Length: 363
Image 1 (cartoon, rainbow, N blue to C red):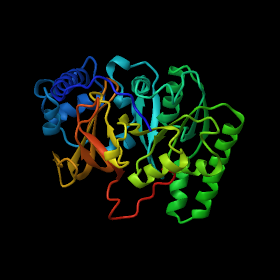
Image 2 (cartoon, helix red, strand yellow; image 1 turned 90 degrees about the horizontal axis):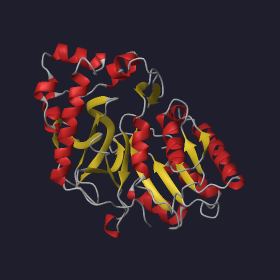
Image 3 (cartoon, helix red, strand yellow; image 1 turned 135 degrees about the vertical axis):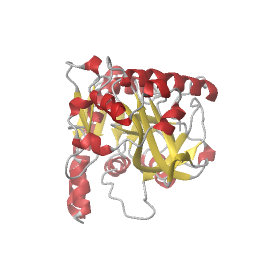
Image 4 (cartoon, helix red, strand yellow; image 1 turned 45 degrees about the vertical axis):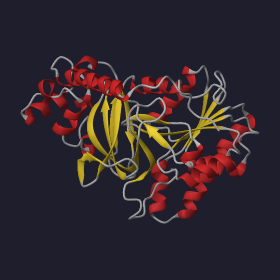
């Protein structure tokens, strides 16, 4: 069972030099009056120091910046995030998370295209043949994912069918202990997906682990024409990964798990080896985004390799600067591997999952 194709490995010191150079470029961009957005320019004035003079390395971001607050994305008007160079250019508004109240919103222009074009080089043509149709079974609406998946398919010369779902509704009814409503909604979504697979020639599938399993109960995916599955969602335990690969996909379909969100883009996984025992490790699209696994009680410190910690994300593009955002996820810290010369995150799950019940819905 193969996944991502490897490229010539980057050495860790080269990756560090490239990341630090990218940090300097992005800090100059976001904190210069000619190019920066009003939020970060105002932030620097209030903070009383100039990041352009004092941030030269990624380590300086960790040392000097506080954690990015998600309330800023909920409470502030989107215009505060528009860089001066982008003013006057209409933007996309993408939402993430949330079940009630105001969701987090990120604006953007071309980041999602860049992220997914880069990802295209990591999937095999034998699993996602160029020109072959895709099916996405997942949240569309205000989610970046809809445009991103369609752009990825189009970038590979393909078209994409869509089955919409509302994960906020599923999470809400599960939290209200209306399990029969959630199951009925899931059946409704799966029924639509199976109908497409029966009547259209589809070779590539994007969905969540739970929906993939539910679809596999209704139809043989390989016999229906599926050759590659691009799977997103936070919790995929080694036991569940093995079940999906061996039972649902019968070791005949290329499996490409990813860890991603509206704020980061997507982190690709490395090919599974026998010694991995179905434990998936993801690597951020550095230098555009950096993932660290930190001590929850002392977040400037990384945990040791093989230990659990909270996931911290820093996003570094011209469209969006987000330093040290504490995700609502925890993961195992993993060493560099394959073509990735930086740390990875493994077995990602909701933060505190071992201490409390977490409602994940269709994920």
